[in-house]
Figure 1 (cartoon, rainbow, N blue to C red):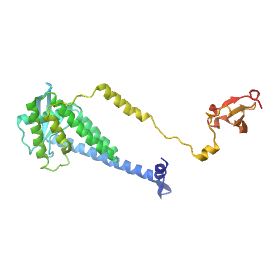
Figure 2 (cartoon, helix red, strand yellow):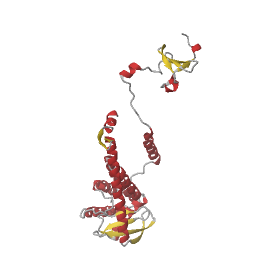
Figure 3 (cartoon, rainbow, N blue to C red):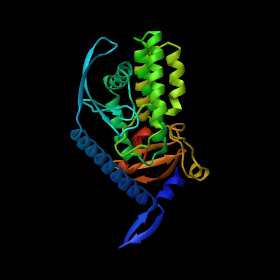
Figure 4 (cartoon, helix red, strand yellow):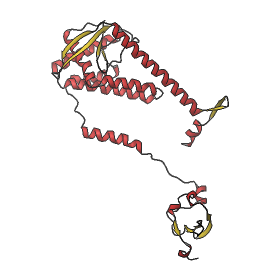
Length: 305
């Protein structure tokens, strides 16, 4: 794309005899922005870890719907406005202290958050936040993150639907609705964790849960082929090919005219170039002649003059 390339090479100003182009300015802004975002990311996690150490953690052992026992920690705090889980190795669940949950509601909340952990969503969320630091300038990443939030939520609900009875599905939905109503009453704080009760997908989740029908798992073979094709496409670059009229007037096609265009190797190591069966000139260094390997090379006694 010559227009874009020329725009990026356009010189804006000079600093101490150093010319600054549009492309260099954009790269500088991108790097500085990424550095700022990354420092904010580190700062947020450091503050969060310090806050966790300053709070008294409650230990709980829970039997998950898939019959596995799980021991986890949870903290009630005013610094979150909805339940959330944090931690890649030792997960901890944050519960807003302005919400009162019954034992059954607490179990449903724990089921939901621990399923996120078991499916690797805490690690995935961490990596997405890290990715955002470096690609903060790309608006498509925002769209991608929103879609990933939707996929994450639907997957967790789907896992629970596989083991919940219809009555449990209704109770689970009632618990989610309670959290949904309460979370807007309190503004987010610096320590608010990424939660999974996004209003844009809540209705979709509710319809799926109340239909009591888990989504069928995608065929692993189809999923693998799709991923391979997606990454494989990065190794191929499709470019348009065209030759302008001026170039066509001063050049010739080798492939279609091999008999009329050829080289004659002389005893002194030079090559005589013939175009359309007419002598054109002498080539001293054959390595500097483009596409010489596509021409037939003869010796003087092999050609009739």
